[in-house]
Length: 269
Image 1 (tube, rainbow, N blue to C red):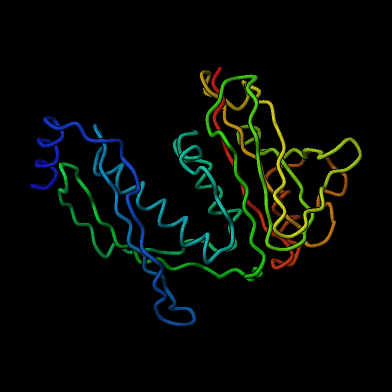
Image 2: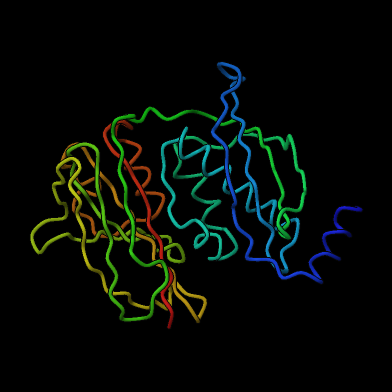
């Protein structure tokens, strides 16, 4: 209680930079078998008008994502956009549906507040237990990015992709509000594009504001980059499927045969 009162007083007289993840530790594996757990530390720099609850939520989400990304095999990009969209509803949905590993339980081992260079920091240490680990290919690594994570309607942006192994790239648009996954053709005659290892592929997209994926002021675009070792359309020619059907089809593929990453950006009206 004293700590919360002190933080409140301090925040009223100091201008603090935006709340951010300041640092994160390596993952420490603990135990074996069903008792295996993972320990990670994350430091949050508290921003102006931020609360202890918001700092904890950011530290927890970031730590959980890191554990699941490294031990579960799914890459989440621009996660703050997902949390902004409907207060994290879609991030929580991803944990339960998309990830190979799921958070079963967790424990807060430490939460320590301190001041450094007139900024407030909170150190959190979490211990996570997950339901299962991924059987992904450790040598199959992909990287998908966008040159912009916020743009205006009609503005051009460039998405880029590279892979550590030869693969076939498929793109999909994820529409959370409609619970749909839509296939994006990579040419007039093909859904996929062959990528040679270490090749840097890029494409220009036009940002289009979508009312059905917006809060009225800004809309949210989510693009899946699916890399397959074999040229196989998991939708079998279907251009649109439900979110659940997409992941059901994906889980029918051996986990070491594909990698999936999502890139998100915000479109201003």
